[in-house]
Length: 148
Image (cartoon, rainbow, N blue to C red; front, side):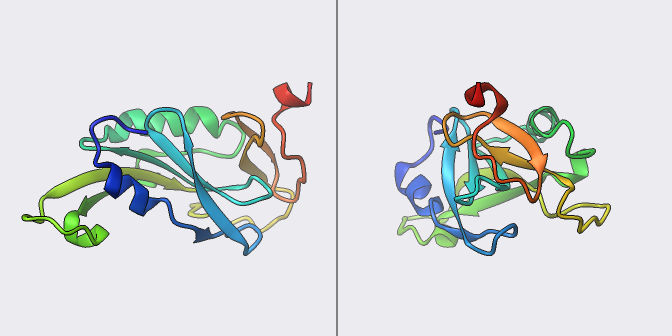
């Protein structure tokens, strides 16, 4: 997880969300040193998040473009940046200073609406930290490399 961040704050971020793919629970899973994804049991990626005290929106945008090749165009405007403060996270602090920033990309926020179950979607391998693209209706939970 991102170095230099308050472990108590990071623990508060690890909550479940509702998956927009299956309506089930999407849990926060850490991928690499800075990133996390909200992913359902079917391995659909609801959201990719990068945490830090200072998050480079352009760098994160490039990362998202790389992992979403085949899903559709990702523009800088698709990346949101939020500032999280002690009061916002429910942390008891002497001051309500900035605790962290998070840049995030949400898969369902598409500029072009396509409700086809066969549209390309981003998934996270259940065996590694690898992203892969398959149809939204796909059932594979392993990336091509792990399928072997």
